[in-house]
Length: 213
Image (cartoon, rainbow, N blue to C red):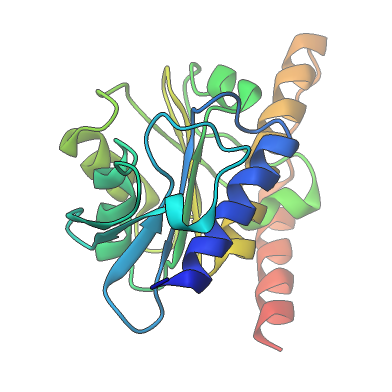
C-alpha cells in the first residue's frame, strides 16, 4: 500500500479524536502531508471511523485532486490543502466540531488563553460563517491563521488546527477546545480573566525555547 505511514497516522489521529469526544459520528476530518511527495492523506467523506482501515484513507495532491483510496476524500479537502500550500511548515491539519469551540466561535473577538499551556495556541482568531467545503472558507481560514497561527474558530462550524506534525496538530486541537471550555464556564460564572499579556508572551518564549532543544 502506497503512503502507508501517513495513512496510519491519519487513522490513529481520527480514532484518538473520536475517543476524546472531539469528533462525533462522521463529522470532522484530519489530514497529513507526505514528507517527500506533494500528496496528502485525508479522512474519507461520510464513512464511520471505527473499523476503518489505513487503505480507506484517501490520498489527494496539494490541489485536492483525488489520487487513491477506497472512498471519496472529505468535502473539506479545499481547506486542508489550501493551508498546506500557504504554510510549508504545516504537515498536519485537524478540523473538528468540538462543542465548546463551536459555542465560543459565536462570540466577538479572539479566544484568549486562561492557563499557561493554552498560550502556545493563542490568541485564536475567528472566521465568519462561510459554506463548508468551499474555496471561500478555505481562503478565510488561511487568512486567519496567517504566517504562524495554529488554531482558528469557525462561526457556526467548529475549529481548524494545524502543526508541524500530527502530534502538534492534535495538541493544538486539544488545547483550543480546553481554552474554549474554560473561557465558556468562566464567562458563565462572570469571572472570566485571561492570562496577562506579559504572561502570555513569556510563556510563548519559554515554550518555543523548550521546543528548539
